[in-house]
Amino acid sequence: MIAAALVIPQQLAHLNWLDTVVIVTYFAAVLGLGLLLKQQTNTSEDFFLAGRDMSAWVAGVSFLAANMGALELMGWAASAYQYGFLAAHWYWIGAVPAMLFLALVMMPFYYISRTHSVPGYLKLRFGESTRALSAFSFAGMTVLMSGINMFAMAKVMQVVLGWNLNFSIFVSSLTVAAYVTLGGLRSAILNEVLQFFLIWAGAIVVPILGLMETGGWAGLKLRILENTQSAGFLHMWTTLGDPRANSMGIHWTGMVFGLGFVGALGYWTTDFLVVQRILAAKDLRSAQMAPIIGAWFKMAVPFIVIVPGLIGLAVLPGAGLPLVGEGVARAGQHTYNEVLPLLLVRYAGPGLLGLGITALIAGFMSGMAGNVSAFSAVWSYDIYQPLLRPQATDREMLRVGRWSTILGVLASIGTAYFAMHFSSIMEYVQALFSFFVTPLFATVILGMLWKRCTNAGAFWGLLLGMASSVGMWAWVQAQPSALHILALSQYAQPMAESLYRMLWSWLLAVLVTVVVSLFTRPKPVSELGGLVYGATELPLEASYPLVQQPVFWAGAAFLVFLWLQWLFR
Image 1 (cartoon, one colour):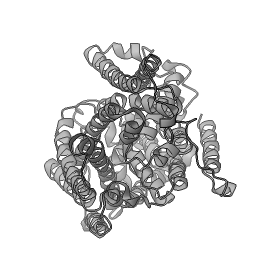
Image 2 (cartoon, rainbow, N blue to C red):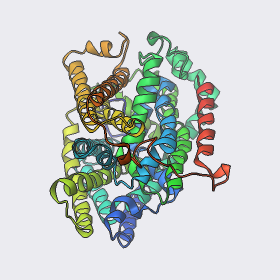
Image 3 (tube, rainbow, N blue to C red):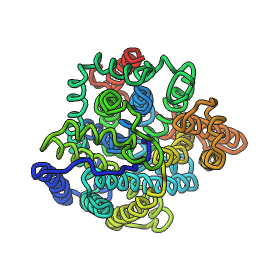
């Protein structure tokens, strides 16, 4: 999710030889790791699930890194500049509780069922029709999301460094295609771990030097107050009681239920892009610990994502007045999305600039690789094998996985050029999540928690949930005033409307699923073992000391999360 169109009018920086060496070294390391791991990728499970032998730490870091692309870095720095500290909600209430819920409640079913994907779980629970619907929709979403990452990276490299747009698209796509095709998910995961630390190393320069320039956190707040004449930019909760009091025009119900409940749980628990990383864990305890480890890291991410946007409010000329959010920037102006590049150029010298640019490249490629590897798994296991070649051998599936990776990259190149025609990438990305992710969460959570949920109920709930979200989005495009109806506020901005759209589509999916299920025949309880609470005997954690149990670290993480909400209220 990002906050504004990537329309950047001028080149911002030039690389020297040291910066170039840093970038070239990164590309060489990525390709070398892919070649090295090809020797360990001999079966379809090696390719799609990394042999299910990843430790909790590796799976946890990869789980977070798959979501921590440069769209996140640039987009949420832009959002922080536009909305202030409200943007941190997407990293805290919009992530941490959902990640802990995934670990403690949903992960046992994903892992015990030994499924290769979320659509694979739906096949076991609801049959082929629901699996096929979710597989085709998810495959389409991953390609569209990969294309957005590709286009955004190419556009930023064009503006920041003057690189040709087509050159950037093809270099990044060929690199991702090479290392994912060679090493499969194992290569994607280990590269994501590398990219995670590169992103931190490159991005941390801006908040550290920015806070030094502004005189620390207290000095930063004073400068923002002077420049914006609004204390609302510095608070997360105190302005949410009245939509008129915050720049997003949103009520707390939208933030809690639209983002914290439906949006966050939908993304972190059912989006196979991130769930796939956890399925690669070596055992159930590691699979549960992985998102908990990710939650601890996630709470720290606003330091390198949100704080730069706030620093932009404090130090950039005009305190935001020269920046525009939508469409083409006027002469002498920049878009919101240029906040991070502007600050990177301001603070990074030779070598550091190369490291910062490498962090952005690593972030974009992490996003592309995550989507492409997820597309490959879903295409191979949930479309090709069940619908086209049920008798496919393991060797054939490995071959299909590699070719589908190339297919995913080629399709992503097409969607990258398609994304150029949208004036607001924010609306594009938010629409994709509301179309596919939140209705799917309704289907999955009802399937796991309600034994009475039927195959027909799940299929029609998922289908009509998706259709309703598309319909609401189309209504707003055709009649912009509908935004204020859906978001329950005449002051609502598009970000607020997207959260309420997620909530309404989820509620409709639940309602349809429940009603249809009550009028159709459910599966016998004997067929629900390993798939539904109340019909599954979960493994006990009694053999581990308390401090080694997932529930202990999940509880500690939740307490820290609550403290952060109070601290920045």
